[in-house]
Structure formats: C-alpha cells, structure tokens
Length: 569
Image (cartoon, rainbow, N blue to C red; front, side, top):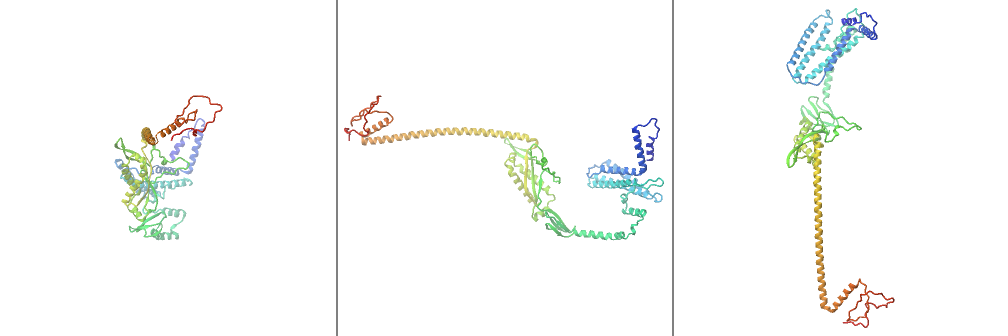
C-alpha cells in the first residue's frame, strides 16, 4: 500500500512549467484530501473493509436455494481434486502456524484459526459438489449454509474494520491484528465461543468472570435446569389443542384409538402418543387441469378489470381448461373431436368418524386421488357423448353424472371423501377452432332454418290445398243434399196435391188457381173493371194503361161477394 501511495503521489510531484488549470487544481485537492484521510484512518482497515465487502458480494451473487443437476464427469472430478489439494496445502500451513509459540509470533494463533475457514469451506464444498452430481437434494442446503457462514465472517470483519477506523494511528508501536474473528474461532474442538471474550475482559478490563458467584452457579445448575426444562416440555407434549374447525385421530403406541374433536386433550407424550389432524367440514375446490401447489390467483380489485379466470370467451385459452377427446358423428360416420373444458370438483372429508379414519390412513394425497379419478371418469363419460349433446341439453345432466361416478369411485376406494358438487364452468372447442366451429354452427343453423322454412311452406300449401278440396267437397255435398231435399219436397208436394185432387176435384184446382194468381198478382198493379162476376164466369183482367178517374166510386170489399153472385156447392 505504501508503494502504491508513493507511485500515485509521484504523478503530482513533478514541477509544472505552466500554471495548472481548474481541473488539475481540483483533482490535486481531492488527492491531497484523500491522502490525508488515508493517513488518519490507516491502510489496514481499508484493505480489510474492501476484502470483507468483496467476500460478502461474492456470497450474495452466488447464494441460491435452487439446485442444478450436475452431470458427473472429468471436469467435476478435476475441480474436486484441485479444491482438496488446495485444502491440504492450507491444512499444512495451519498446522505450521498452530505450532509456533505465542512469544515468537503472537498473531500466529489467530491466523491459524482463520486458515481453518477456507479449509472447512473447500472440503464441504467438494463434498456438496459430489452430492449434487449424485442428484442429492442435501447439497444445495449444505452449500447455502456454507455461504451464510462465510458471509457472517465477512460481516464481522466489516464491523471490525469500521471500528478500527476510529482508533488513533500510532507509528511508534506495532499495530494490533484486525483480522480476528469470533465466528471463525468456533471451528475447533471442543467449541469454546466464550473463551476469547473471557480472555479479552480479563486482560483489557481486568474482569474475571470465573470469580463471579452468579456465573459459577449458572454454570453448575445449567445442565439440571436444561434437563428439567426439556423433561417438562416433553411431558407437556401430551397436552394437545384441537381448533373448532378441526378434529384429529389419536394414536397410542402407533394404534388408532379414536377421533378427538375440538378442545384440549391429554394423552401420552410424543412419540408414544400423537394426534393426526383431520379437517372438519372444510370445503375445497379442485380443478382437474390446475396443479394444487398452493399458488392461487390474487384477488381482483372491485373497481378494476375482471381477472383472467372470469374470461369465458371461446377464442381465448385459459389455464384452468383441459383438452378432452369427445365422440362425434358426421355424415353417418364415426369420429372424434377435441374440446376444452373447465370442470371443478367441490369436495370435503366426510363428517363421520369412519370417514375421518379412512381419509387419515387410506389416502396419502387427497387432491391427487380426486384428480386422477376425475380424469378417468371424464374420459369414460365423454366417450359416449357427442359435442352437440354436451353443448346443448346434455350439459344439464353432465355434472350430475360425473358427480355420481366420481363419488362411486371414492366409495369403492374407501377414501372418506364426499363430493358436494361438480361445477362445469365451460365446455367449448379449442381456441384455434372456435371461429371455424362458429361458422359450422352458423351454417348448420342456416340449413336447419332453410329446411324448416321450406317445410313450413310445403305444409302451408298442403293445408291450403286440403282446405280448398274440403270446401269444394262440402259445397258439392251441400248442393247435392239441397237438390235431394228439394226433390223430396217436390215429391211430397206432388203427392199431397195429387191426394187433394182425388178428394176435392175441381175445388182444389180452383183454389190452387186462385193461390197462384194471388201469388203472381201480389207484386203487380191490377185494376178490376167489373167485380160482379158470376160464379161460373172467369174474371176479366184489363192490362191496359189508363188514367184513374178523378172521383172513383168506392168499390166494395174485395172478399165480399156480390149478393147476386151465384156460388156453387
């Protein structure tokens, strides 16, 4: 560091011919201020600070809990061999430093403790690398723990360097060693983390913790108190609390004794007695195409846009939907189609004690069991349905059929699961074929509408023809019936007239003559010239047109016969 400072200061030590400008004067001022600050603080705290900060940044950049599969090979074995060789060299150096007397080199013991840290990290890193190559999940935890330990030592060095900056600089005496670590001092056997603190207090502050009676009493009674506390805690493990919304299966020496409901229960301490928690009426919803990993969709704002799960449009793909092959019949042939469906199952563990026992001991993963059973039931159920049936009236019975089939399988497996409902959120063709399916549906609807319209027109014409034929037939029948009735009437009249003629003779004919005459003259204008007509003389009608007399003589009553009229018998 002294050589570096001398090299940097030599750049400004040359005599300049011309007067320096503003930038040169500012940089020279900054350099002088920095040099003064470094001389006051010292180069050793700055070097320790920079190195510890660099170590912490390296650990921060590479620290992760995600394991990467490493294929074992030549490069992996080479890295392990290099790490072990370097660790062996550090071990030889540490043993050499530990053998040096404190009077000969006081800092040798502290440096030997620091040398154990890279040895410890290299050996365990090689072991973790070997475990990672074998596919073990313990390696990532081991490497993460090593990184945390190194970061902890780096933070301790960082704090020591910051504290050393405030110590006065005295060039007349030998500077103390800054890079000592209590965390790295724990890498010894037996571990004595408080020995350094105790020696520090005794040498610098004159405080001997071994002479304090309280600490001696604590040291003597600590094992008894700890054992008593552990024993009491172990006995209290037999007292268990079951919440209001739960229940549990009590096991005594590995045998199920019964169901314990909400409240406090006293039993044997662990591991002789334990309670396996079981849900009590908790309702769950399971989608057959969504993984049950506990990741749920965040709640949507009431005033904001709708979440993606509420999108039910056919032209969009949804994470909760699953593709399913369904039967199809086209042009009289058999085939299949693909549909996207979102079917959700609402279930819970049965409320009876028997159902709780079955769910606790016969099923390892309830969601996985329901999902696998539901997928099998859906495959069998959709194999006997068609797309038009599912999208129309068959959808009403689909949920009920699936629920009954899944519940039957759950009962056969003695799972203790109760299927409350099956909710069919959506069933539609895939998003890519939605528009084509819409076109097919529109064409089918148009064809069916055209067929129905033509059938209506044909039915209308048929009904109209039938109506005309019926009217003509009715008219003909009515006309024939009227003719027959008129004939019958004429026949009856003729027979009546013939019978009257045979009985009355000329009187009937005269009466009929006058009746016909009356009927004929009822609507005509007639003038009787001489009403004194004899009984054997026919009346004379004058059909000539003439003027009516001014003072006509009133005629007698038409039905009153003249006194001199002769009437026959």
